Image (cartoon, rainbow, N blue to C red; front, side):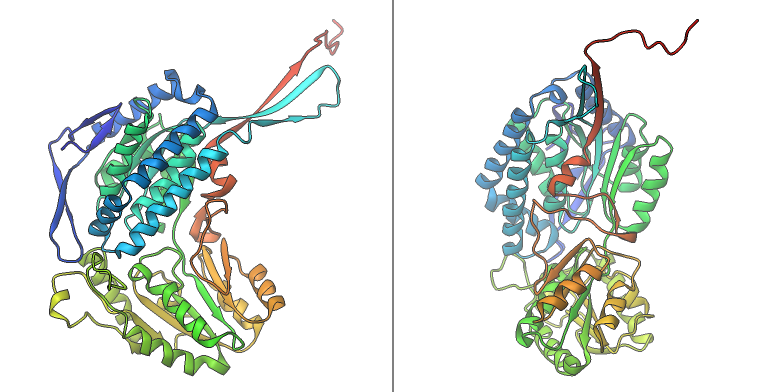
Length: 489
């Protein structure tokens, strides 16, 4: 089957090259997909440019654009189980998490379907009775949307839904490692009635396909989620043509636990914060910061429970955590843990590949807890993007805040305490884009998502997520023009 979607037509890549998509549980080949070339990207951008400049979509009433998003949500629900299974085979995550991802993206499409026509602009008081002054919102134009491998369906929908609601045309590139649910999403967009050229899909290596999507002067905006180094390159490359850019680049997220918290609940959530999807989550609570009075007991409870986490095939209902996405990523996690031990961290759980024969064919690594960590360690400052938890300790509230903010990142964080006033003080003091109080991981389509510092710029979700894909235009209408009289000659 041809997997590139350009100008309303499914086609193979112009080079004829294909890429195997591998199930990280057992390395079986799930599918073969077409590999795009720079020429294919140019064709996709040309189709999106024509659809924006000459097609109906940017001029379609916002309510009709919202209706298309609603139809996509209906189709996602119709195919929920098929999509969830595809996501699990592609990423290795548990089937329960994949089902939740589908439900979440349905909510995202519903939210932007409803929001599409809710903010047509505003009147501005010009101070003159004969002037009508308005601010209106228009789509940015052609948008290149580039998404990561860990949450392929979720992340692409966070971009696609607001971009289309605003009236843009798009070129989408998922990670070459996990492209399958994005292909399925584009099929559903076509079925829902997206006009030809409005949605375009290219697959392939970021160094070729992604670079072409960023550098093409016909592209007006780039939205990227992924690693810092790639995000920095995109920002530099986009500057050549002064494109609008939003980037979300991960985090090193503090999870702060005060001694007055319900102990068992905090331990349970500390595990969930970091070990869901084997830690391959940009907002993972991978940096646990525990108050002195309960530190030792907390570390012991964490270690005991981490060793009991059930690894396995994401398709099996009893599996609690799946494999890492690739052998290369597992190798990187092993080097990361070795670095921590060299720096003086104490291994209290994991730190090894599982011994079960049934897991030998996959990219598994045991959930790992490193105690006795210090803020100057690389493992405390650098994002692992894997099942590795570092534990630090603190004495006072001020010290907890200082530790929580001692990072170049600023995506997310949490504070656990039974004191509501302290919870609010710490939440307000932490310089991160999302703060949970006595919880971890929930998000809402209505609430903005994004980070401070090296976690990126711009926001996804919420009203700001739609605003990123709009340009504000001021229209001044002088209803009674007369000579200005500025010059007398």
